[in-house]
Length: 171
Image (cartoon, rainbow, N blue to C red; front, side, top):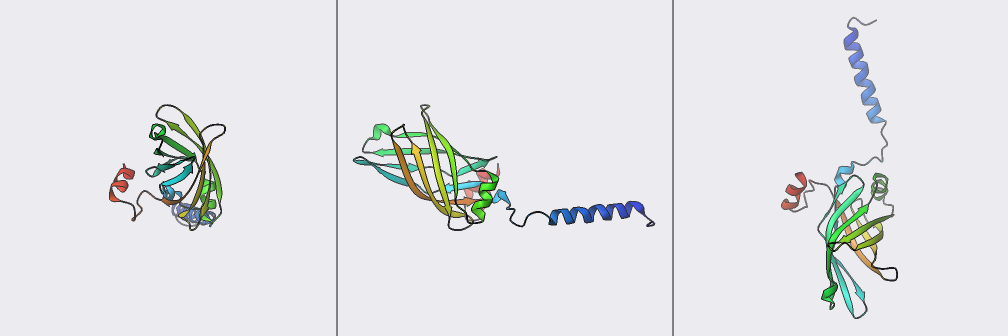
């Protein structure tokens, strides 16, 4: 028995903690680097016109990314709409993106007038933080809009993000 059992127990506990921490999976990703999702503005064609979709960066809370959106319909400006958009991407899905695997996701948009839109998409990574998106927005039972764009996953303190975004994320 050691002379100082308390020191021995403390050392044993510390060794156990270090060995357990080292036993974590190698593929485990520090998910905070995916706190924000930036999506490039995109457009798609409709009958004699086009729809342009823009949105600020999505912010992650749990498994949900949320943002606002603006959809401008040219030349049918009376169909323009604004609202919120939420998509669900689990931790396991983020880890798959980190490994270079494609994922499929779902979500919903709600216009400021209360109209709901079902959203489905596929993200195909080109790197651990960037990739291509194909998003389907179901406007009605018969009408779906398909957008092809790109995304970039970024943490709250990403050095390439604008300073105003970093300040807002820190609050």
